[in-house]
Image 1 (cartoon, rainbow, N blue to C red):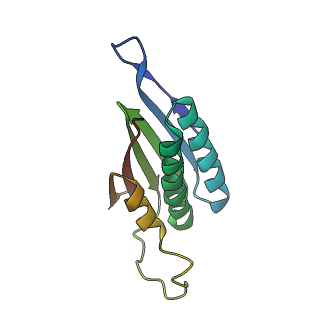
Image 2 (image 1 turned 90 degrees about the horizontal axis):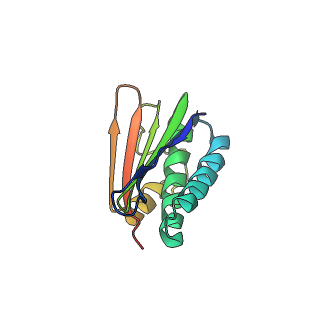
Length: 142
């Protein structure tokens, strides 16, 4: 696990304007809870408003669950809070996900992406050389 938080100060009143953190864990479902708690604690320390913090935790929970399910080796969460906008990036070492899985009941799976798209201002998913990368952006101003 690697964690970092590097706040950069704003010229106005010396207040942190940009925070950045990174968390890397094995891509296993058992670690999704750790990602969720890490995010909640970090966003509280960064003074993100509670309603936006709850939305961010839900977005990250969904993205981490997908990374744990489909990633093969590790998953990485990168959070950047910059001038009131939270940038969320979750990467994993998996391959492209098959969209329709007939062995899964439709009422049990497949809603996470919709939840993320509803809560975030923007989302983007792409395949990279080393795996998948999913980005979401959430406005966090009070």
